[in-house]
Figure 1: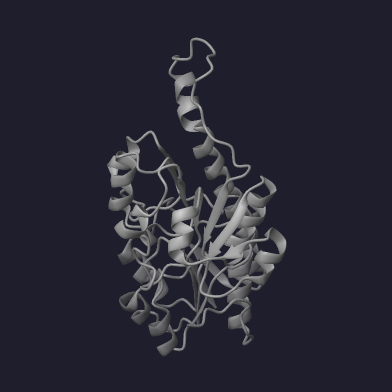
Figure 2 (figure 1 turned 90 degrees about the horizontal axis):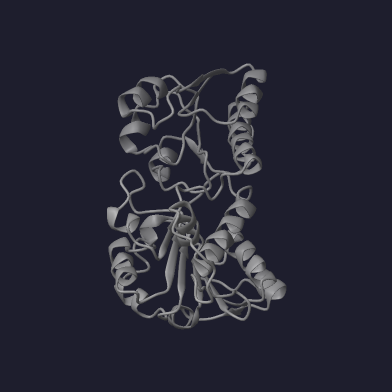
Length: 318
């Protein structure tokens, strides 16, 4: 049986698939696989392991003649037409859970970087402009005593809240359902969206991407933030109206923003690149050796399970 992987993933997962006697083909270039190249390889593949950067839409899926499983190398799956795949009896899987800690760590890193103005401080030093210590040099804020708001209290939101609590923050959250574990571990209080936006000193976004959450945070929602608040997004860029976020950053209507995701990650808005009150990262939330390897192994095990007639570990069901 043939397995096609759209980019080089940790070797451990590739070796695992080869040990199962599958014929494994990997796109060799260090960039997203071109659409024509993708179609050529998936036509006769029994399984496909794509990345979040691969758009596995209806047209692509229609070319899958014998494919039985699309094992997404990501926790999100908005890059795949799951409903159409199901209509073709193709199982879709993802990699939940294993990137929780890495993403939560990065979220807190962004909060600290914004609070203590770390990128500005490093640039000052590297540019040779640090001449002497002075009392008002790059004054920031402390996390202790601040209200840390969680928008979307799933695994990553919960893990982030636990870390923020350790820094002495008070936790509030908005979610569709009550998170008793979060409340027990941090003393968090579930509040309305407006209350979350108006009261958070740090607002951290942890929603999944869907038609319902597209621009969930827009002009109206951003206008409710305090002038002293820090906005953080490590989930999906399209959840926030980026143009409106840029407007309030340019007018200093919030303190700062920390972003690991963007509306168009292959063509980041140039206005973001020139702002001093925003920390920008290239979508590295899960970029630890442990997380990326475990993601690859879950994808590989999902492939092996389906191709051997068993239930996958983490099937996506809408």
